[in-house]
Every structure is written in C-alpha cells, then in structure tokens.
Length: 292
Image (cartoon, rainbow, N blue to C red; front, side, top):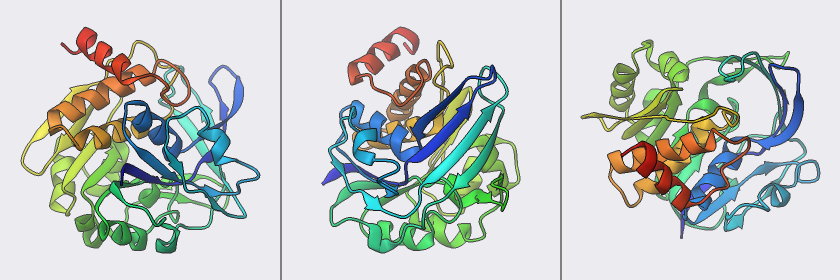
C-alpha cells in the first residue's frame, strides 16, 4: 500500500530561456510530483509510460526516494519545447513535439495506493476511463492539465473546456488547476468563485495554484496560503510540486496544515531548478522562518 501512486509520463523537455540559454531535461508531472512527495517522507510509486530506450525512467528517478517504478514501455515519448520570455518564467510558448499512446485502465499496476494521482500532460493522455478505474480502487486526484490542453497539428497547445467534466468530476476526490485552467472550466477569473463552482461540479476538494498563493475549497470554505520563494530559478514544476505536497500531507493533516506545508515546499523548490531534492526538515525549517 503506497501513500501515492502517480500515473503520468516523463516528458523530454527542451527549454529555451529568456536569455537564450538552452537545456534538455526530464520533466512532467510524474517527475516533479514523485521527487517531492518521496523527499518529504511518503511512500511513492510512479507509473511512467513512454519509450524507455529514449528516456529511461530508472535513470530519471535514480536520485529520488521513490519506492517503486512501474515502467510501461511505449513506441514514443512525450516531448515538449518550452520557450520562456521573462526571467520569472511566467510567459512562455509551449510546443508539444511528441506524444505517448493514451493510458488505459489495463496500464494500472497490480498494487494499491491511498491516493491515485493522475498527472498527464496533454489531452488524450488520460481519459474518463482511467479516472473511473482509479476511483474504483481508492481516492483519485487529477491535474486538469491533461483534460484541457489540446494539441494541434503544428504542435501548438491551447486550453479548451472539457465536456465530460460534469460526469467525471464526481469521481475525483482532489482536483488541481491553475488560475488559467480554472477560468476555462468555469468562465470566471475569480479564483475563489471558480473553486466553489468546481466543487459544485462534483470534485470534493479543489486546489487552485497561482504565482502568489495556493487556495483550496472543500465546497464550504476557502483556505489559502501564500507562496514565499526567495528566487524563481526553479519555477518549472511549481504546480506539480504543490499538488504532490498537498496530497501526501492531506493523508495525515487537515486542509490548512497540508496547504501551508505544500506552499512552503514549493516556495523552497522554486529557488532551485529541477525537482525538489531537499528534506522534510528543510521544509519545516522554512515554515518556522517564513510562515510563523
């Protein structure tokens, strides 16, 4: 029984920074979420799907504390080209230059988890069938990125509403969006109002991330915690780290405590490029210094 089973592909990311610097790194929700949740002391399994010769998941997670890698070999990998236009990495152009075959319920390993965290990257990666299959096993957590981000023939991506939200959201215990995704799903740029609306659609707890704060709605109340990074070199993976921190802490803490820990975790992570490789004590020290 794992605390968290994270189902999603590793992506091969070609990042072009605002100053012209380029790098190729392993990205994707499963990478940032897996590293973070395991680093703060939770038992984590990951289920990456892709061409294992081109992108070896065992090498990607070699420096992590992830307990189990259920690798699924596929003929292709997800590949992304990210061009950043500002130093804070808030403005970017993202092109999807390669995709994996969709996940199916048969891809779920013969293992149990307290939370099944679905972290695909592009529309088509993970559908309602996988959401419902996970919900039949336990609590399901979904990042809406893979439900809204549509790929066009030229590799460009656009956020478009998901018609199945009304029938599928009731299967979701934890739903994560960023501010832009929440607006696409609800039609409002008011994050608090959007959070309530998403709960009304069926999700039990809604986490909305923003560059200044993270908020959670349980259908009755809004909880919030600020992000307090001392640098932005590690901006990529912000939402994934927040969600993984919140989910894993939510197993043993109430919403305010889990949210504060997640906000501190991602604030610390944002100071350094790549996934979080610190310790739980690092996060606790950060909370005591900046959140108390």
